[in-house]
Length: 459
Image 1 (cartoon, helix red, strand yellow):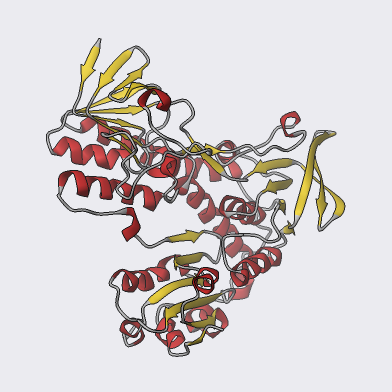
Image 2: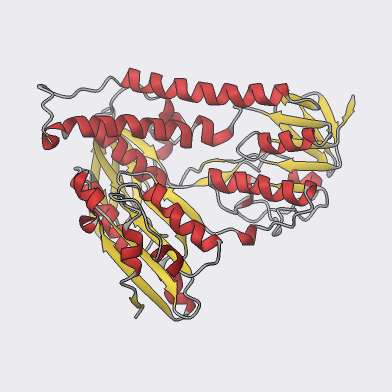
């Protein structure tokens, strides 16, 4: 039987539930479809659980460093990995159940559990139910991709989702990848007590970041005893008496590493292959990413794509901002656009990296006249007092307009401090606005004006 709605939302990641709240409040009869877990990646296998695990790993790290601060714990630090997982699971459960309860409590909303597939530009089938609406919003997220590595199908391996079920300490964790997921899990498990080896195909970690950032992160990880192999290739994976062996070329030379477990963290792909998008006429690129315009509309009138599946950010905050853009245009007569937002994100190793705007490499490639300033965390009083002086901060400024082009803060509190710069960038104000601000001492943020006072031409 055909059921008619004003709107259909496929997926309940960071954009879907909030959009459902706005649509139903506006009086629209809305169908919400979820085939797996309420809250999507962030709540279930992404931000929420990983940052809970990072917190446990940092607690272990600081406990081992107790003597550095005059704290004598009087014995060896040990990990209860079942307790670590239990704590993480409880945090996830509250978030997951909260999203589900919120959706079910909405007036004008009907929640369907199952796999939604388009049958036409206006109809979606969920198991035996056929739903119709003039407005359809796709918020299906993404999942871990599997690289074409010889022998990978012959060994058990983990990805960012399945690793969430681990309640034991791997003896030696091998990680394929050199991006954010790989580095966060690498440091996390090293702090839990595992031996960790990172295997990165590129010449360095974090290939999208500037060389100085990547080099500093590399040093931070190696300082904690993580083995880092870069410039690798020609992989072959095999089972070696119950362990996992990776044979590869490293800097052109043959090398082999053997570990107890393997985590594959080499990228993600959108969950668009089984949505019946061809029946709706929705265009996707060769990676399966749904093509959208500056207001997140697909090529088919009445269909929008939000979150990781549209290739416009793949972060929780970009997905939520997608919701804000769509709601503003649809309900508020407020013409917001994707191009209005400034790139910003964080890497949650310890110390974290906070990034906003352009990288130094992008500024150089633009050919514009620019200024640059840097400051090591060894010259930040708050970092010295906390004995966390790894990393540095950097800012780039347009030489003519004096506006901040981009910034990176790799250091204690960097993921929070970056927002003071980001807000000035959104205000389109000159850097002198923050340079002349009086900040609290002792903080990390108070050194941003000091750093900006030392701007020099980018050569």
